[in-house]
Image (tube, rainbow, N blue to C red):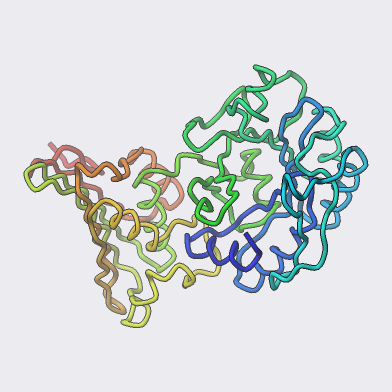
Length: 367
């Protein structure tokens, strides 16, 4: 989990933005942020604080100086020293993964700060306070206390990857991988509908300002469809057709998205499946073709791109219909509504076929 490996894995999975929230410490955040800047990955400075009640609270900050002020408060209320034989060394590294120091505090322990004090301090330093993995029996708000105390001004609640909820107790809900090893990075993430991958936009999304928003349901094909449609619009397409077909006899689910945008030459087609490549200067969503291709492969299928400059692009994905790892379709209607609302001049066509029978279409054909 050194800086260069973290950002490399995040980029490979198509993430636009990650948060670094170590337990009761922020000393490695600057190194990861610098490693992220080298590969154009946004890194949000953060810390995971353990309260006196043994509840984890995430603090996300715009500036590393604000995070450093929060760390000072945490360390002033964090008793004990680390036992390296029991818990291992707590190393501090530079952006090139070289060890430059060791933290001797008992970072695994609980601070003497109450939940209220932690949230107040985070806000005092301009941060966002998120109750971490609230549904877990250990160190989660619900698991420890049984409820969300009234009056606690959390900016969001985080749930574990398997828990699906868009809102809870009137708080926005997010989810994350809570990765403690490289293979866990990106296993769960939150989709932010924002103009840029930065702290200010995260805050607007959590508050629902200016059309921004969040979605935790990352495990369905509708979000992949949304991302590809966004790519098409960014490539000047004004006509997009989405075709989904189930063939139960062949045990096949096919997805085709065709647009009349700028198209791609051979070099761009080759790069299109590279998670480090994008032709867009800003991105609203971060799943992309590489993850759709991965989703197809993991369910016994494949992905093809047919595109020429000036002739548009067609993306064709195939999935084994009965494969246990095939992602569900998700809320296709909501995806179509979102695209139509955001781009009213777009000619958007949709068809859903099952065993050669048309079962849904948009817009509905005259009867």
